[in-house]
Length: 123
Image (cartoon, rainbow, N blue to C red; front, side):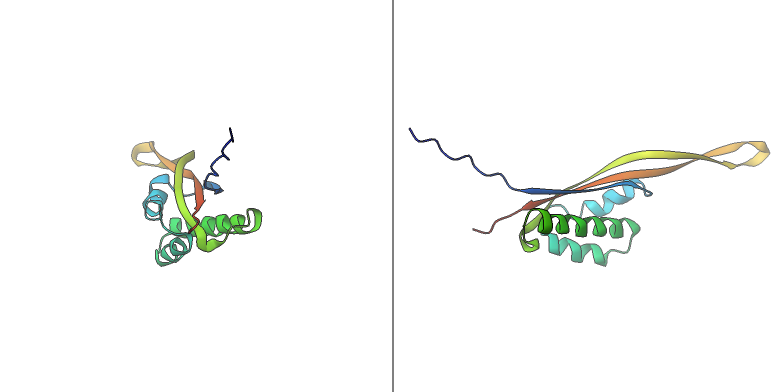
């Protein structure tokens, strides 16, 4: 009996951005728009959005595409955004003075962003 060759899984390329000084909720609003889009279309879409989180995700997307081209020898035209995972990072806790000598807390949130690109072969 001949053994069948294992099916080659889709190659995935990952890029991460940690300790981003933006709340995870604001980043998720932009990240939702990118899932399932071709990588080059996602770059164009991110450029048209005028938000800090869009600029950060755009930089991460460029990094992931460069990783795919240089480390895995994949063409940018054959990449698709698999998923964009946004997690909450540490929180800086600060206080602001308030009336009658009291203080109100301020939470300065951070987030971690993981971007996964998948290779799609057009056969």
